[in-house]
Length: 67
Image: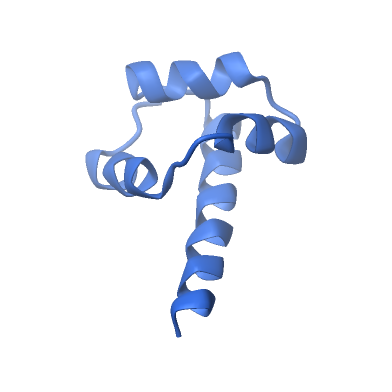
């Protein structure tokens, strides 16, 4: 699937060094799948769901820290 532009931009804004390894370990997908998703803006539905979960959690943690 193609990752929607608005979602992709949000993930890029939230992404930081080491996230690929963390996502792979936490979500059980390979760093290659993650890298491919960020390079091509395409991934499988299951990879999309796992990336979405990771970045949603990260965004919530950031909001907690800020407030």
